[in-house]
Length: 103
Image 1: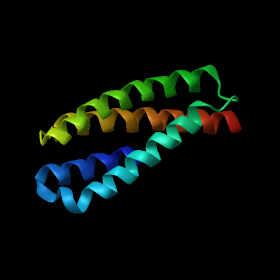
Image 2: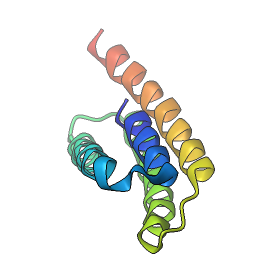
Image 3: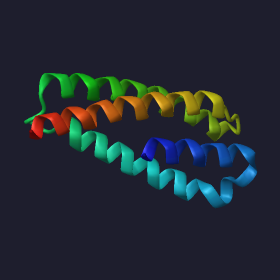
């Protein structure tokens, strides 16, 4: 649910709470980035898991590029929310693939 935490934090920053929320956003962002790297580098991933994680990485790149507009004080919470929703959906699929691999 890190993608949802990032989106919610981003929205709060867009609404003027940047000073209070930016550290929370940055922590969630770093946690997601680290977790995605960890999962993607797992040598035991099936091809389906690797493919799904590659899709998540592409969506996360879009999320990152969009969120960097905030550095120029231009917030686009609608785009961030859509990206976060796509990431969440895909990560739920990845979780199901991992669960299936354990059975």
